[in-house]
Image (cartoon, rainbow, N blue to C red; front, top):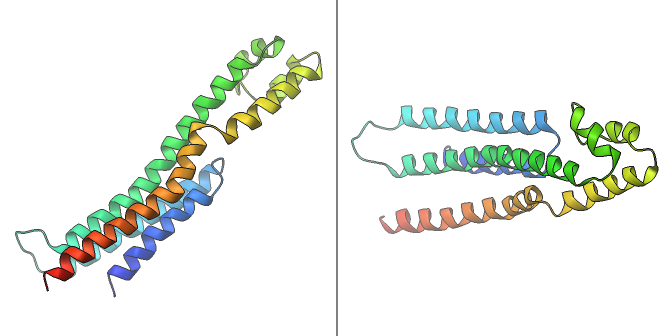
Length: 171
C-alpha cells in the first residue's frame, strides 16, 4: 500500500496534463516535471528500502514501468507541441493574397495582427480564421492528444492486469 497506491496516483496525476490546453505551455511543463520528479523520488525511496540483490525484483519492474508512463505523458506533450507548431506554419502558407507576404516577414507568421495589417479586405482575415479553427479541430496534434487521453489509461490498465496476474500467481 505504501508503494503501489502512491505510484498509481502519480501516474494518474500525469494524465491530467492531457486535459490542460495545449497552448498552456508553463502549466503542462510544470505538471510534467512535477510528476517525473515525484516518481523519480519515489523510485529512489523504494530502492533504498529493499534489499540489494543481483536479480530484477517485481518492484523494480513496477517502478520502472510507472516512471515510463509518467515520462511518456511528458514526452507526449513535446510531440503534440511540435506537431501543432508545424501545422500552424503549414496553415499560414495556405492563406492567399497579400497576407502571405506580411506573414512570412513577421515574427509570428500566422498571427492575426500580421493578417490585420496585411489584408486590404476582411475576406482574407476571415478566411484565415475559419481555416485555423477548422484545421485545429482535425489536426494530427489534436488526434494525438485525444488518443493519449484514452491510450495511456488503457495501456496502464493492461499493464496492471498483466503485472498482477503474473506476480500473484507466483504466490
